[in-house]
Image (cartoon, rainbow, N blue to C red; front, side, top):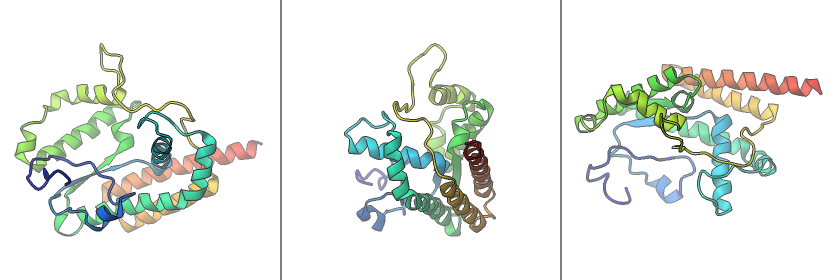
Length: 237
């Protein structure tokens, strides 16, 4: 709340990475008392960890944000040094918001938003449904928010414009598009198995939260397929 607008009640939503990768002074005093509901945007750690590394690479090299993918050799060095720390940060981040907005006095004040569902270019029906559910959650928070929202009939257009980046009649991209470096960053089989175990433990701790547990199952299935593919490639050599 660095500009006082949260306290004054003139903010509909705040983007935050808290508590992951947060400066100590913010971590110690997050000032969440004014946040009654939350949207937990989750992305598979297989892709969210490399995305975070790309952000670090851009910052460390004075590059524009969301412009450049790190070279593979830079990724491998960083991955091997920070892999376990980053997986644990992903788990702790998810668990924090579950603990604070799905249990206790704020039960059911959390909307889980899977990044892969929202941006499913190969499954527009899923993407648009995910955006519709998000709109419904936002509208349920406050009438003041609801009355300023677009109608559900406009969801298709909004999803096409901001997810595919190519609305009808336009060619300019409207989303992040990094260039250079690989589009997919590798992990060792052992690292992926450790990631799988971390997700399984997180799921087991939250099995009663169906939407969250189901998403973790989905992420685990994706990991198992990836492990199988990598093992087959290794066996072929």
